[in-house]
Length: 451
Image 1 (cartoon, rainbow, N blue to C red):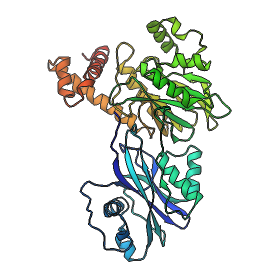
Image 2 (cartoon, helix red, strand yellow):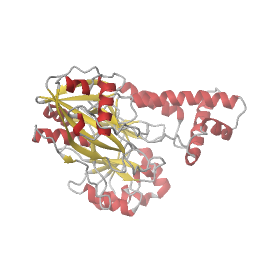
Image 3 (spheres, rainbow, N blue to C red):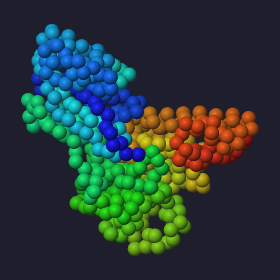
Image 4 (cartoon, rainbow, N blue to C red):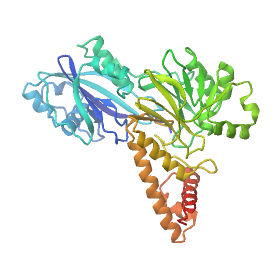
């Protein structure tokens, strides 16, 4: 589902001399977990439009200023109005604006404000909102990003870049990226060297896109992972987007249509191989016929095989079955990130379908990836997120669901009755998927002789 109307928000850059104050969002937050950002938040609908009488604040839109004052007090324990009266705040300027694209899962229209300080403030940061906070130069923050050490949304980087080019900047203008969606697929980079190409795909709602991903150091194989446009028109957009430099191989995580559609056509057109698991090769050949891969060089891979490099670290294959028996993931030896495909959903819920899915295997795979402790996980639907928190929560949720399904089954409820009891508030379009998960849990319980 695309989001046409953005949420209005404010973001605050406190600056003292050459340093800016930044925060890292907690890994369990719903929006942009673990990302480096600036303090701020939503402008409430009932935010007062009564102008401030306090000097400096009175020069700006009152709703934005009241949102800033409220958010900074809540998040940092700092009263801006008192800071002005104490001569700690020198000036405030609206430095930039950015509107997220309509396809963004969390869509904001953000106004960035520069607040110049007379001295460096020791803020009392809300630990429920932020994992850490620090003062740093824009150069150092961007250098850390370029080394693959941090997650950032593009507008954060553009503001930092603007401050590097002009440290005294007070008006960087509209930094919204203009996506030519009539002709190209958007390109997003939240982690350096991992380019997301969210293509429109035949995936399950509420998701409407799959992250095709470009990956690989300049002197290594450049992979295009899971190109899966839903139409010839979207295919042409993707083709235009990836030209220059053209990827050197296609990597398929698994055999579901929203991860491989048009990949064979693309491989033939670009004259590049397809890398996939033996199981995925077999399933696609059985479903579409051997001609599906005609004139394409195929390379089947398995656990621990090297496929490319990222920031000098070898990227290897991981077998992550459960959602699909041939499901593959990727991760560098540094474990800076782990491409988990459909192991979790950044948007929506994972389905364990029959016959290729297995709930017991799926839960064990969750445990496997959690034990590897990657710093960032990258799903096929949604944005990268820091830590394995979402994997851990998914594991807990599935075990809780299993307990509920077992109890209801033992009470004599049918699968349809279990569905209506546990998923009554779920979008009816997803009921068939939820029913599959119920059946997958019951099959697991039968294998374990619990039923």
